[in-house]
Amino acid sequence: AQTVTQSQPEMSVQEAETVTLSCTYDTSESDYYLFWYKQPPSRQMILVIRQEAYKQQNATENRFSVNFQKAAKSFSLKISDSQLGDAAMYFCAYRTGANSKLTFGKGITLSVRP
Amino acid sequence: EAGVVQSPRYKIIEKKQPVAFWCNPISGHNTLYWYLQNLGQGPELLIRYENEEAVDDSQLPKDRFSAERLKGVDSTLKIQPAELGDSAVYLCASSLGQGTDTQYFGPGTRLTVL
Image (cartoon, rainbow over all chains, first blue to last red; front, side, top):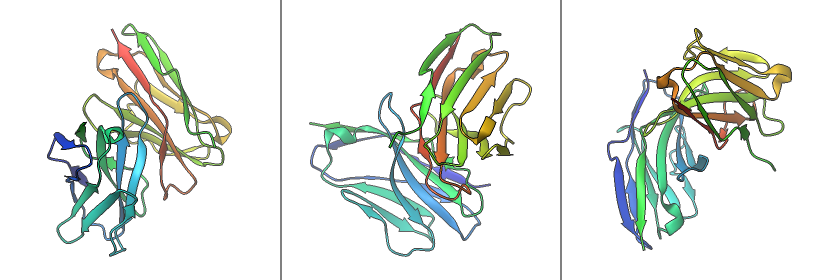
């Protein structure tokens, strides 16, 4: 069975600094997709970034980038120039190519200090 | 473009009462998902629809939960009777089709069972 592990329950970062959120996953599939979703308090979950496993190049979306290490089954999210609005719960998620079911980690609560 | 709409946003009921949640997906999205999110956890899939057909309902507790997606657009998730352990956030998500692309989430319905 596929599992997604986010071992850090909470992290804190100073505004304008950089923070990295960790995620590992376990799968025997070769075709899959990885995602980071952001869920602000009492607000809906939004997609931050996605990575296709067949792509070697790490995905980047403005201040958000990933470090995808396929052999190590690691998928970390780097947030540069952190802003107060980045404070939220962040979920790492996995999906195979054939099955659209998303498997989520337990999430990490990120706080941003002004 | 309107996002995924869910109602109600909050619901408080007593145990053994019935409850229903409604979801309207993004226009043109053929795939619809219902997820359950317990406090401090990542969402877990309850059921997935491709148009009107429920193609993955293996995690739906069918003794008390039911769902329908008439005409392949809106969907309703029902619990009857509700139990204390059903207190959670019920999330609806949709994607374009074939379930292979990005899922967009609604704001969720927070259910409290007393």
